[in-house]
Amino acid sequence: MTGIACILTDIAAVVDRRKKGMFRLILLITALIFVSTVGASEESEFVAEMQVLADQGHAIAQFFLGDAYSNGAGILKDLAKARMWINFATNSGKESAIETRETLARLMTPAQTAEAQQMSREWREAR
Image 1 (cartoon, rainbow, N blue to C red):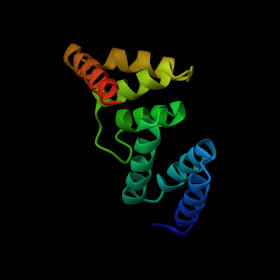
Image 2: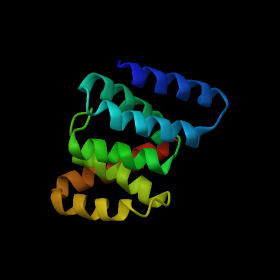
Image 3: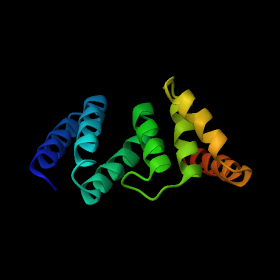
Image 4: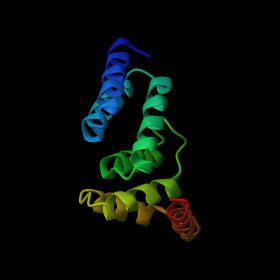
């Protein structure tokens, strides 16, 4: 991991211990943007962090995770998973996710849409 990414991760860990999730989320997004310019391995670490925050219901993390899946940024491209996370972000109040959701809907096959719906149901049932 690069020096700046390490520093941001350390700051995020301190903030996390203080239960300030939104500030941690902002730091992670900043770090993800930074590491996307320097290498896939660092980017993957931050995608994993986004997954944790998305699972906790943070709309911004859900949006960024959906975007990562739709573009294959630090994670294997998967339009069904992208649609699932973008839907959650939209439902959590992230209005800018609406346009992304509509774009994904146009790109996806009916089978991918059905898969996204099934994954959404399973994710909600597991919570």
